[in-house]
Length: 443
Image 1 (cartoon, rainbow, N blue to C red):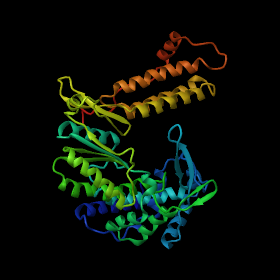
Image 2 (cartoon, one colour):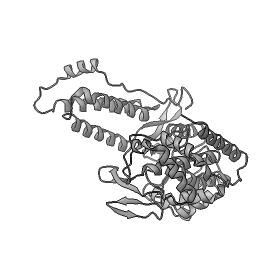
Image 3 (tube, rainbow, N blue to C red):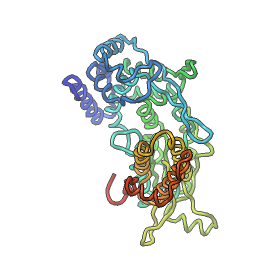
Image 4 (spheres, rainbow, N blue to C red):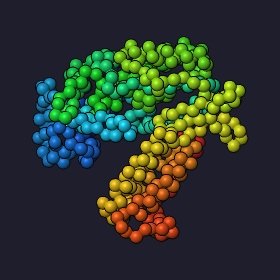
């Protein structure tokens, strides 16, 4: 709930947005003062109360107990420029069967300040960001990115795709270049210094403090907006102003965070864009993954070309879906989508592992609700046009796995399929459905 004071800050942020929209070259000189007690109070209340604690071991509830005193002290340190973000607590979560992904858990006070800075930056940069960018932005989603890409391939003269993977993007972002980009719009030295402190805060890994020379703080609230600002200047704006003007035919970019594809009309343009992307990222300290970046033919004539060249039509993965050449009922070309094999296998393995682990921990009725939530979550992401078979397959596999592990609960009596189906009638699981229709309405 907003107070009168925090409401004033929101009004100021709205005015900042208007100014940013009116003047693309304006530099903001006074922003740090917006991080006052009432604004940070609202930031605190907006945070998830059940998140893991950082190195300070302070939970949301503990910080909230003496909130006025805590925030007053925080603001005083911010004004004196003596505030120092605590390093994140480094943990590792499974990425796949063999790899783990590092994740930083920030201290609660870090989160409060980061949320405030993020809101300030959003008020400026949401007016600058281009339509090709969809990741970690208000009212934008991965499903909108998927729809836009499909619409471009279906309706424009697209015959080639350039897909690129930035090698270790979030770990390799240059602090020097990022600060240069921030100075294009921000002249407030206090805010810039505070952002730089977060970039340099580092993390604790196995009781050792590791300082950050590159990269954005993984797991932090501020990381997505900083990544978007970096890629706005390195990729989005460059593509819109340079690539489009020098290409011979149609070309467009669709980006979600650091995952992006270029849809291109001519083969020569695709080859040129691929080389230019490599040079562009190298200039800013980044590298394209040599095994995951490629150019290939794809579009209305891909099936015919593949048949003539005696090969299979090209397919590609983007945001967890495999895209392939399909046909409408009238025989016209359209982009088809299905859950990528890699993602499908990982989801099935995760479901099997969870059912195996939970079957004997508690009674079935106690974990049945979690199973329903897992299925709904799967449909929420993968339930898009053309992918009904994919979510149906996942639903059927989940039923088989559930039946299997229910029958492996110690020495309990086996449950036949007939009894299992009767149980499903009484306690039904969510049926697969298309959540995101790319044809019935605009996302």
